[in-house]
Figure 1 (cartoon, rainbow, N blue to C red):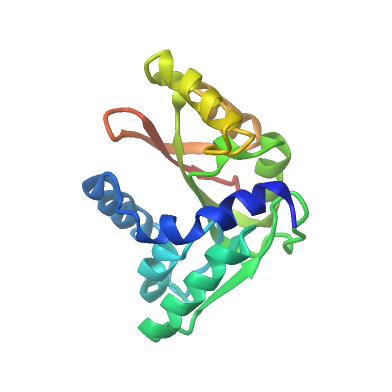
Figure 2 (tube, rainbow, N blue to C red):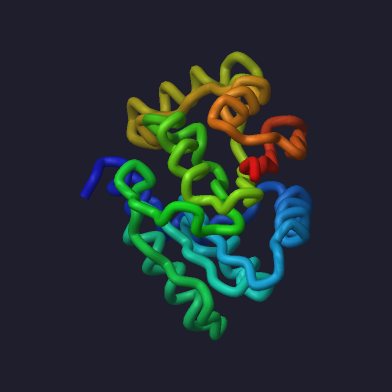
Length: 208
């Protein structure tokens, strides 16, 4: 088991029981995303956590592959899917750094709260681009610590030292994130600044 997986396994139960901090922004992101799904969409989600978002999207797609590095998170997600009677979502333990997704397979790829945690963001974005169909959408939501007060990055650094935050947490700005997505070969179609501008919700398209 990788060290990042160990961290998320330890907090899985607490994460599952925690409330969504900005319910209004979350519901807006769900609606915006669902409006982008084509009919009979095949969707991949990276870092699905305990499956809340995947299960909310399930009625709007044909097939949904929800991946995460944490077996603890996925155990909770599978139980939720069973309880809700959802059958078109598959939960799979995968690390984006080692995953081998088929080329041009998915209509949409979702990456919620993960781009600032990737050890190699450029490689991750390239892999996402490759697994999308031409014209497919990449939809991401990312905390931009670089746009927050100066003490937030310092706080995260302190939390890392005591094991309360993942080892990799980048202090990205909205502008840096958008530039990275563009450099990976995507065309940005929409960029919302949510939760008082702390979160970048970006819709990008793979060229046809």
